[in-house]
Every structure is written in C-alpha cells, then in structure tokens.
Amino acid sequence: MNKKIMLTIIAILLISTIITGCTETINPNIIKEETIRIGTSLPLTGKGATYGKWERQGLELAVSEINAKGGIQGKTIELIIDDNEFKTEKALNIINKFVYMNNLKMTYSPT
Image (cartoon, rainbow, N blue to C red; front, side):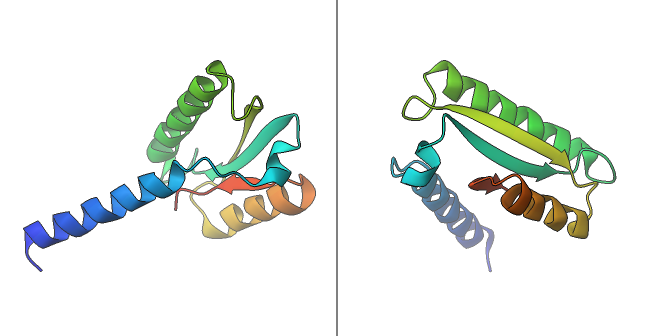
C-alpha cells in the first residue's frame, strides 16, 4: 500500500473518531450523578511509564478544561486513575474493579 493511501485511511479514521467523540448525546444514567466519574488504567510505572504519564497529563488537562467551562450538562468530571504497570492482566483487573466494585459507568482505556 502506498504512503498516500495509508495517510488517507489514517486521516479518515481520526476524523471519524473525533466526530463520534464530539456528539452531544450522553447516556442519561451517567448524568443522574452529581459528578461524572471516569476511571482509566494507565501504565504509570513499568515499560510504558513515559507514555502513561503523557496520557495522564492530557486527560487531566482535558478534565480541568471541561470542568472550568461548567462540566457536562452542569456536572463536573472526576478522573480516577490507576497504574496498570504496562501489564494486560493488571489493566483488565483495574477496569473490572472500576465497573464492579467502584460502580463506575464510564472507563477510558487508551489501548
């Protein structure tokens, strides 16, 4: 596959991801809470620590900007971050903990 076609495919995927993520439709069950709690599992230690720290900074910046503008439908966002040590099994356990023990309605996983 030549470079131009590959770049076009990547651009289409990025644009579709952005458009999908920018819709205003949000699950009404999430908005019933006073704060919108989002859990994420990032590699803050281990082989992927550098990337995990960048992801954490980006997420924290996004959350602070959204909250500064009034949140989502007046609800602030609370970001809950846990270290998966760049291990798949640990990441899965963290997401399960978020959903089943912490009763989070939303999680973010970069990989």
